[in-house]
Structures are given as C-alpha cells and as structure tokens.
Image (cartoon, rainbow, N blue to C red):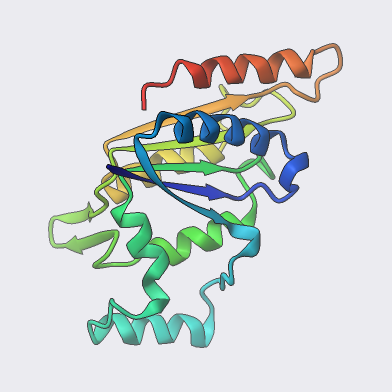
Length: 194
C-alpha cells in the first residue's frame, strides 16, 4: 500500500476555502482505500524556523551523520511518502510562512536531497506532489504567482516525479460566483488520477 502524506497549512482552518478543497480531495483518497495516510496540521506542530542555535545544532548533527535524530522526523516522513498533498491558501504572492518553516525542516541534505560535484539530486521516493490552493484574485498567468511555482520547483528539487496544482482563483472578484468556482475546483479534483 502506498503512503500518502497530507500537509495542512490552511491557517484559517475550517473557514479556509483551500482547506475545504483539500478535505474534498482527502475524502476521495480515503474512500479509495489505496493509501496509508499520514496527516500533519502544521498549526498544531511544534515547528521552529532555522535561526542561530537551532540552525547550528542542525548543521552539527548533519556533519556528525546523526540523521536519525528526532529532529529530522519531518524530513524522513516526507522522503518516504509516495504521494504528498499540500494545502495552503495564496498569501502574499505565495503561501503562509508556516509552510516555508515546514519546508526548511524537511529540506535536509542526506534525507530529502543530496549535493555533489554534479549538482543537487532529490532523494524522495515520491511519485506525485499535489498542491491545493485558492486565490481571491487572478494570478495563474502572472509572474507574481509564486506559491505554485515554488511548489513545482520543490517537487523537482526533492526528486518527485510529477507535480499537479489544483486551484480556484477569482474567488473575491465582484461579480464572480465563488460557489461555482469552488465546484469547478472539486470537478478538477474528481478528474485527478492518483
């Protein structure tokens, strides 16, 4: 059975439209019975961003080869997932800082990637990363949209075979029908081949 890791960074929790879309996807995944599912609600995790002593401790452990320390549990969990679903709203042209903090914690040389004279190589066993997001305005075709672009680059960085972004946008534009736009997103999710 494949492992699926669901990472929830929907700060507004149940009020979040991104969370509603992710819940729709995860219900379908759960009903399929094809996956062993691990879920992380980042708002409930004791995440620390990399700074000063926390960063130095990490570098010391890595130089000593202590990659089995519990400090690297997030990275090991991420690297072992076959499918990764990340849900986050579109904030400040990207996504909430909490998700970036999580990414810092999973970006570990020797676990999720390694570097050598030839470049950087992903070590994740993942075959698919799905990013679920919603946007109030229209950004998909603008260079300002950095959330999905960043996630796609991360998938390549970690060696994940395929990247898919499931999104709805224009939800806060006057005259649009947000319920229909969310339904269109659900329809896109229905067409996913996971």
